[in-house]
Image (cartoon, rainbow, N blue to C red; front, top):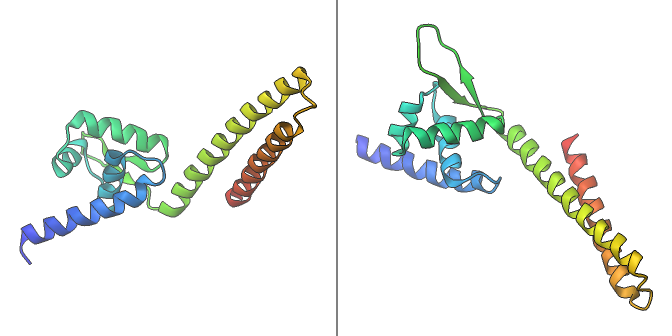
Length: 156
């Protein structure tokens, strides 16, 4: 196999795997950056990442900061190396699931709180003649509680 074929295959792998990673809420660039680091056998500098992905060093820095916030990459120290080195967190499944579940819990709680506020406001208006509205709203709030409970069990 020549280098061009290997480069094309690597690009295809990164592109396809990044689509899966994007489903966890990462931007396309963040997903490609994570996959690139995940596939490497050694930590990389921002310059390495920039060259490999054809993006600016600034874009790489922003992407690394975001991935670091999600605990998906770590800064690595190596004696004699003056530039920052980064590597992917290899506990891939656990990292993504924790991040994904936390996002779902937070979003569900936010929606549940907003719906409970609407429910409270409707009670103030005393609209007993429209019980289907409050009944439906109560069912929707219960759905959000069940959703949160299910995701909390996954976190354990």
